[in-house]
Structure formats: C-alpha cells, structure tokens
Amino acid sequence: MGGMRTAVIVGAGVVGVTTAEALVERGFQVTVVEAMPRAAEGASMANAAQLCAPFALALGSPGFLNALPRNLLDLSSGVSLSLATAVANVPWSVRFLFECRSARAKANSEALLALAYQSAAALDQLLERHPLEFDRRTSGKLWLAPNVEAFRQAGAELELRHSAGFEVEALSRNECLSVEPRLTDAGYPFAGGIFAPASAVGDCRAFTIGLAERLEKAGVAFRFGTRVDQIEVSDARAVGVRVGEDLVAADIVVLANGLDAPRLAPRFRGRQPIAPLRGYSATLPLGSGAPTVSLTDPKRAVALCRLGNRMRITGSGEFAGPGRPSRQKIKRILDVARRWFPDAADFDATDQQEWCGVRPTTPNSLPMIGPAGPEGLYINAGHGTFGWTLAAGSAERLASML
Ligand SMILES: Cc1cc2nc3c(=O)[nH]c(=O)nc-3n(C[C@H](O)[C@H](O)[C@H](O)COP(=O)(O)OP(=O)(O)OC[C@H]3O[C@@H](n4cnc5c(N)ncnc54)[C@H](O)[C@@H]3O)c2cc1C
Image 1 (tube, protein in one colour):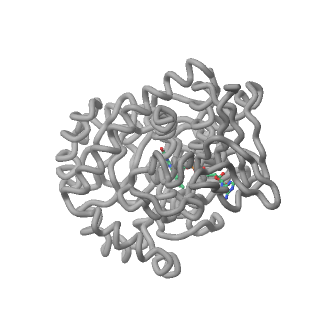
Image 2 (tube, protein in one colour; image 1 turned 45 degrees about the horizontal axis):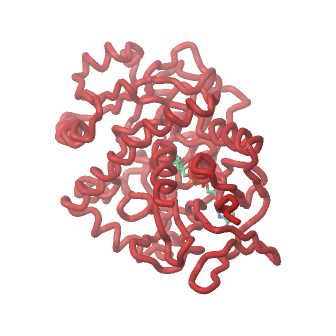
C-alpha cells in the first residue's frame, strides 16, 4: 500500500510554517511540533518587517570587520557583544572571521541574493494559493549613507545586486528627498542612499499565523506547547521526533527550529553553528508625519517602516542570546527614529509593543537547507538577518529536494 508520505517539522516560525506549506503542495501529510503555545513566538514575531531581497548581503565582510572595533566602542552604534555569548560561541566566531575575507564575503552575498531572488517569486506564488492579510505593501526601501565614504562603498556593491537581477539605484541626497519628502525634517546628516523601489514590508507574525491557520484547516496537525527533545534514528534513518515519552513518527523530519536546530542535528557535511544576534523593536500608532518608504539608518542600526496603521521601529545588532526588551535599548531606537522623523509615530503612546528577538545566524550568513545526516533528516535553519525575506524560497528549495 502506497499511502501519503508523512513529514514532521520542528518549529512553527516563518520558516517552519512556509516549509509545511511547501510540503503540503507536494502531497505530504504534515505535522508541525512547536514548543511555544502558538506560531511565530520566536524570531518571527516582531522583526523589522522588511521583505528586502536586494539588501540580503552577507554580514561578514572586510568592511564589517574594519568597522567592528569602532562600532563596539561607540554606544550609539547599536552594536555590542556579550562576553558570555562570545565565550559560548568560539567555534562560530572563528568561522565567522574566515567568512569575512573578501572572496568569501562576495561568494556568500551572491548566494544569499540568489536565494532572496527566488524567494520573492516564491512568496508571490504562495500568496496566490493563500491570499493572506499581513499589511503587505510595496514601500520601496531606502538605505541612508551617513557620509560620502559609506555612500561610495555602498555604490561599489550595486553591481552585485544588479547581477542578481534586482532593480537598485544609488540616489544623491536630493534624489533621496524626492523619493521621501519627509526627509527634509531629518535630524541626522546623510550623503545619499541606496534605493530599491520594489522592496516591500509586511507583518511576519500575521503572515505566519494566518498561513498556519489555513494549513490547519487543510489538514496539517499543529502540536503547540510541545518541545522536541531529540530526533529518533533507527538503522541510520530518522523515523520521527521524541517528545517526552511520545514518538511522533514520520517518513521525514525537518529541523526548522532556528537557533536550536544544531543541537538536534548530528554532524553532517555543511553543518554550521548558529549564533544569536539580538535586536529590539517597538510598534507604535502611526503619527501624522510618517515616512512612506521604509528606511534604514546603518550608522545607528535602526530601521523604520509603516505597517498598516502602525509604525515599526527596529534596531541593534548584539552578539547576545534571547533576553527581555530592555527599556534603555528600546529608548535608544525610539530616540533615533524620533530624530529622523519627529512625527513618524505617537512616541508617547501608552500602548506601544516592545520586543526583543534573536536572529539565528550562521558564520557565512547562509541558511542550511538540505539533508542533515541520517537518511530522512533535513534542515532548514539559520536564516539570520533576512529570514522573513528568505523563508518562501528556502521552503521551496527544501521541498524540491524531497
Ligand atoms: C530584531 C530583528 C529584526 C529582523 N528584521 C528582519 C527583516 O526586516 N527582514 C527579514 O527578512 N528578516 C528579519 N529578521 C530575521 C527573521 O526574523 C528571522 O530570520 C526569522 O524569523 C527566522 O525564522 P525561523 O522560523 O527560522 O525562526 P523562529 O521564528 O525563531 O522559529 C523557530 C521556532 O522553533 C521553535 N523551537 C525551537 N526549538 C524547538 C524544539 N526543540 N521543539 C519545538 N519547537 C522548537 C521556537 O519556539 C520557534 O517558534 C529580523 C530578526 C530580528 C531578531
């Protein structure tokens, strides 16, 4: 008897849920096992909302390494390092340094851009199958160069983006003002910008929960509040996942549990460690002077965009594990946003939502997608800074291997 092939997916973040969708499309009967009581409670919850494929470049580069000492000393940069995290992630750091070399950085960015390109198309196709509401809007994205040197360096990366098929342009200061007239009031200097007109924004959590609900109606089983302790392997083949005393059996297992994935994956070719890169966000009611395009201030590591009738302000890159949204850190990103656009949001609102999340980051910035050791075990994890942008394409890639 043939019957349907069965799959267990560990994790119901944006990666796990899009993977579930891609497997259902290929005729799998899917169970998703998630430690938290609902979908999108991890990194996918309140991220910067950017669907910004042309900006998906590798974090590790000679430029990043050069600027790191200065950024670590400058409290306004939003870049910091927890000693405990550094000590716990020594193998990660060694590999990261290796990936910062110029040739590696270029190859990693090319691979990331290719996945991002595939992902933009895959998301459009997914939305044709599942028309979801998640405040999606083609906002355009403007990356603001703080000085002439940064502008020149960013301009040098344009070729990489064009080769990947993206429409991106370098804009002079005046051209930036015509793309986003509200920049006239900006409280910080900038020399110009990199603009991607087709970039979009969207609420990752609303998307993930909406898709999970539709999949559940279509027969996908979600086991929330259930933590996977280990993968069950028999005769060198993954046969399911172990949750307490229970075995959830399946023909294939997919690890889509972000930061926790390497713990469950045995050693396999291409395995990378995943380290946490912490960030913060605040979501506030929209103000009367909100910018229309989505903006990134790289000098202070802050991004801001409209999300429906709210303003999402996100920032910081800390080499640190999961934590709480500290008042001081949230205040820093809000102060930056307020100085750029004093009326972008109701900054004194009492009902603002504050969040702290960690980007599950690999040394080369590329997610691991594919076989993960024993037959039947696969991984789709380590999406780092761009997991929302990369999710649909990553799901598609994984599903095409099965
Ligand atoms: C501050 C910040 C801003 C960001 N901004 C952007 C952006 O603008 N654009 C963009 O593209 N990306 C952005 N990202 C990155 C993006 O949010 C992540 O890459 C993406 O959410 C990762 O999705 P995931 O499904 O792999 O991880 P998660 O959403 O963390 O999902 C993993 C799930 O697995 C569950 N889990 C873990 N271990 C187990 C276990 N043993 N058993 C069962 N369940 C388990 C967790 O509870 C969690 O729900 C940002 C991230 C942060 C933190």
